[in-house]
Each structure stands twice: as C-alpha cells, then as structure tokens.
Length: 73
Image (cartoon, rainbow, N blue to C red; front, side):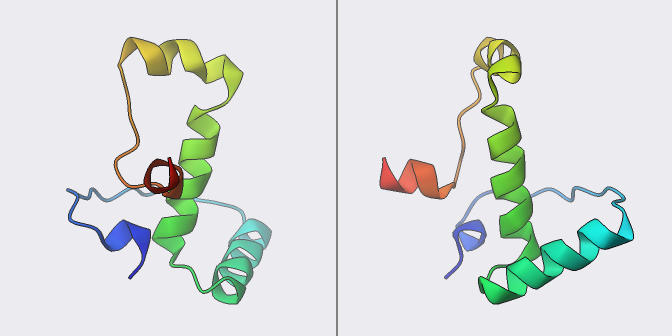
C-alpha cells in the first residue's frame, strides 16, 4: 500500500512542467516503485518545509496528513 492510498480526502492538483522534468520524474518514480502522486506529495511537503515558507505554514497551522515523516515520527 502506498502512503497516498490512505483514507484521506484527496484533491486533483494540476500543473504543467517542462518535458525534461516530466521524463526524469517519471523515470525516478518508476525506479523507486512510486506513484506520481507520492512524488508530488513529497516534493510539495519538502517545499513547504523550506525556511522561507515556514511563517505562512505556521500561520495556517498546516500539518501533513499522510507523509512518511508523520508515520515515522
């Protein structure tokens, strides 16, 4: 079972990325046996953890719902 398969409300999230980034992300996802959704979640959570985003994250009291970090912690 993948982390993003847990019983959590899910929303569509769409965006456009350059072709070279698309190819490498799909290749890494396949090699790591991950779904693209898992890669997106990891990337977005990592982005939100950056120091420059922490003030806003704290203001809205955001907590990850199903990241590996939450499960391990």
